[in-house]
Length: 403
Image: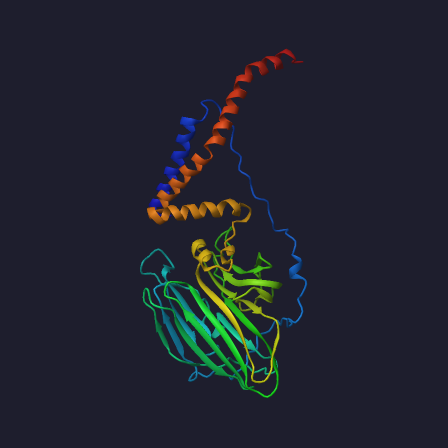
């Protein structure tokens, strides 16, 4: 904790004490009791976790199958993205995310420490983020190798959004085009997956997104959640798979799915909330894997089906998530204090926009809260003084009827 934060706490405490001394009662005060939130670990599993919607494929506990030919070292190449907010590396095998480093965040407070990388997996551990069309009639191992129109994207401040187009073809004559759009001033990436059936017969399959992460050894404390989360039927659900072989499935209308830790998150957000299935599992390797599957579709010959998404990879910042939209700010949950904590946080951020010092912003917020609650506080103090006036009479009555 830096010196300015410590000073802010000391000054805030001094204001609270000074306020009570000058405006509070001069005699004894009632002790303040802190309410301890009840343990909610016994919450019942919602019905949406139990009832499966029609036309969804059954979940499997093995590795997902993706149409395409096996990856060879000479086939795969990396595509580098550089913006003012992050540097990212994608592979044309999948395509898949290999690295995503945030330029404004480092592992420690040391300015020379490494940048935060939201991809915690090594290359041989699988893909941290991938969205593909799975065709169960062509169970071939490996990921499709895509042709890409460029291998480097440089976006400076104020630049226009830029697209990268991946084009691939599977062995069963499915033409797949994935278009990713990058923004210079956002942690958002737009993705459109388009599948054309070039074969002579109908093809069935599903659009599938996968998230994989290696959880940190430090879980972040009692109040910090590390793991998968989803917006299911407009309600935030956490998918906890802490131990090997743990598995949990959500079914219903999914607004988004994500992997989050204490300070950052990676989310897949469909263009429109729709019926789907999300399965989180803890693999024996220690990796946590989340699979998002949309309802099965059939593509007639020569026809095209597409699915649109927005990807978010960045900090769990309430203001940034609010600006992103799609109810992604619901990922930040303060529990039973949420209804009070979020407005206070918005006000704190507003003050800091102009003051540029969180220590002073906290002090200003403390004063504002005391002013807002002054009428109630004054009324409470007044009632206490009235009760104190009655104390001598009550003492006489007790003495009179004693025994």
